[in-house]
Image 1: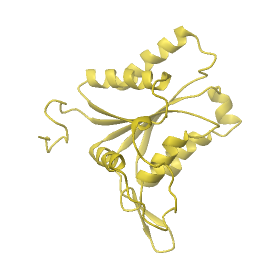
Image 2: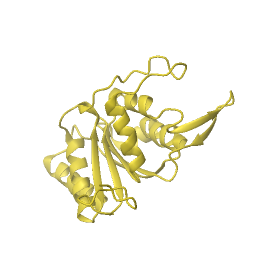
Image 3: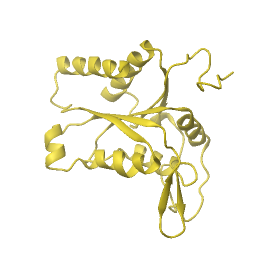
Length: 204
């Protein structure tokens, strides 16, 4: 039975409803460890955390005809939409590849954030109504590129895409973005500190 007030089951608790989305096809990674640490911190404060690992979902990441024709959602994507509706706070955990999002995350967003679910369009003017308004988001991002270089030289394209042209367009307000970088040259001590930082973020 689901608590109508919180949307959580009695076994889960009655804290903030958090959905964590792992946007990588890899089965294990630093990002997975960061997400688990964040969830540990959030649950210690009484929040309810559910997880979606995109690499484990069964769906076609290609939106074959754009929005010109309907494309039936697979069972896993229908469940993902239900989880997004359930959530108050979305935590996206993913690496930056080639300055952008991993293809599995990009494809997931293409397929799940559909008109009528995430936004409305009116006629040919493409004026949007934000259907996921009231939710917040947080981004935990791993990169090999040093953060300053990524922002000032590359223009932080992955960050701008997620915060402005995806989440904000659907009415989701990004509350915080945390970069863990550069990963490739990091030491074990640095990674352990990042895990502690992620746990602290989950507590806030």
